[in-house]
Length: 113
Image (cartoon, rainbow, N blue to C red; front, side, top):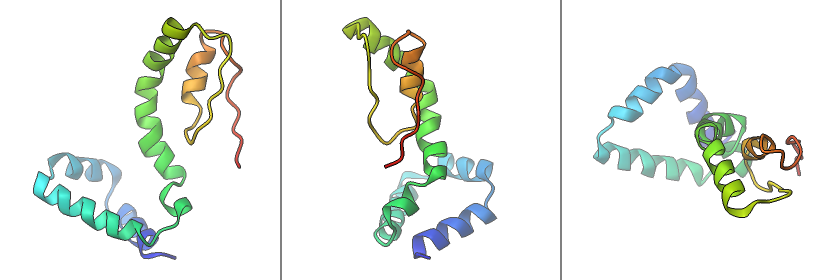
């Protein structure tokens, strides 16, 4: 187990998620810079899969994509009028799902490579 995984697991098991979010919102910028530096140091010892796990996608990617996938899909359809699409990336398929609402493409399927 890397130091990154140990620190992250301990932090998440001790500090509840609502408290973590509240702390993040009220942290002064000087302490935020220290936090960013500390995380960067921890991440140097972590593997890709340790950093970008299911929790990362659920808490980081999905949260923001749920709010933005509809406007992005509408913009793609309005501007480009595609007949088909392919979503290749490291996301969760929410954008492709939003495009399916416009009858473009097929429902997303997860393909792990």
